[in-house]
Amino acid sequence: MRLDTRTTTDADAMYEALRARLADMVPDFELRHKAEVAAEVNRLKAERNAVVLGHNYMEAALFHSVCDYKGDSLQLSRLAAEAPGDPIVFCGVRFMAETAKILSPEKTVLLPTARGGCSLAESITGADVRRLRQKYPGVPVVTYVNTYADVKAETDVCCTSSNAVQVVESLESDQVIFLPDEFLALNVARETGKSITFPTLDPEMPQNGGDPNIHYDLVGWHGRCEVHEQFTTEDVVAVRRQFPDVMVLAHPECSPDVVEASDFVGSTSALIRSVQEADASRYLLLTECSMADNIVAENPDKEMVRLCSVRCPHMNQITLENVQNALLHNHYEVDVPEPARTRARASIERMLEISFGPR
Image (cartoon, rainbow, N blue to C red; front, side, top):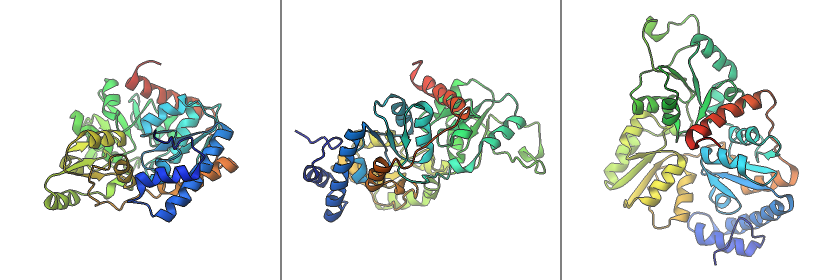
């Protein structure tokens, strides 16, 4: 019978379970230490009735031990509202923990790092959205879930990388403001055949090349993921030259050129499913690098091309040790004040209704 690493408090049993999966990627001395910490985290979880949510980008020892639920931002958005435990320890970045708090205001939500930033979330503010609304009155606003609560509060509906096209098309509007990811917006425009512009909010600068009569279907924003913007078509060409049979999988936060050069594009969970279901000789993942380790741990027959050395500096701050400290000291509690929380919740619930139907 396979050990349930989410509940065991036996450090030796935890070590054996982690070693069976991670021996090829984590040194043995580190596995022994991580197993002891993971066993203590499980003890604290049981003592406090806590639940741990883990994003697909978590370090392997954390991802394969104490996470009660794992997934991408859309999946975890739903689970945050449905998870029975309290407190919720969100192993991700701050905007994800805020989403959990928005959907479950009665629960304590802990982020195991003091900052948990995100280059996309920090590229835009609620004030920016209000200025765009003034510039484009009556145009609906779709905001990527990788944003802070003040931005969600100014938004008509949120989206994730897995449902962005569905959300945009559901509005049936001849123009949509799509924020803040530049590359995701360009990829949505490409997939839907829509035209797109990236306006400046500087009143001294001309808009749309100075011609106010040009109509654009999408209005974007110049935010980028500091991880995905690093991948290039040269990377893809070089790997294909060396491994002609490689299957290239990209996240839609990559540039349109990289997306065009790839064999499959999808959210982190969609990328995982695609690797599990495909029968390629080897795979190249163009996303945060720790996810490849997590896939290999569960699918040892899959060969990953180790091009990637790009880790998200913010996701990388989340460790088993930090989760332990979060449960010991209630670090770091996330709060979303009213009325921003209620307004942000409405935009998230509209997204969930579009994707999954009325609750």
